[in-house]
Length: 173
Image 1 (cartoon, rainbow, N blue to C red):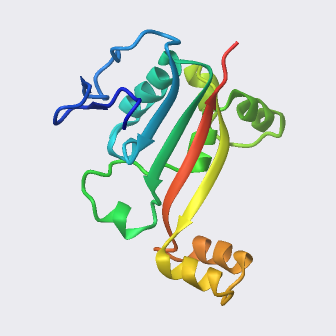
Image 2: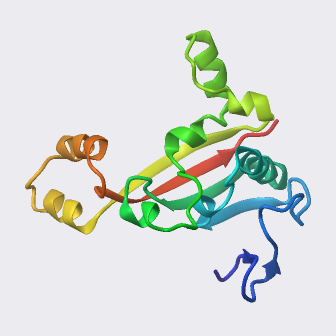
């Protein structure tokens, strides 16, 4: 991507680095924006590695930094059929890394894993956009179904949502 430091462990990127090797080659609090377009679902096959990725994202980002994540929806064939996809990424899964949410859930005696508190990281989910498959988007555009019917289909069927775009904000001090 022009204007960004492009990173990959393959090919000829600006920085050749395996993001499952720690620490990452950037200073703490040195990054104000990250774009992970079809990256995160390929990383963190084990929980320990995934948690280290989350901690490194937090370490290198400045407070207020934005992280733009695009991933295949975990119930779409694009996710399920690619053997390099090792972890489903969802809005609710990333919300587990919010200290404010962790504290609220504790007050409500909810059983959500307080990963933000456990790992001492803090990310706020700013936005999550579901990109529908062409067929479902066309039905919605032609008003053959309502938004509520699409939400119901998302809960019940595979291949309704193709991708999820999630925006995180880094919360520090």
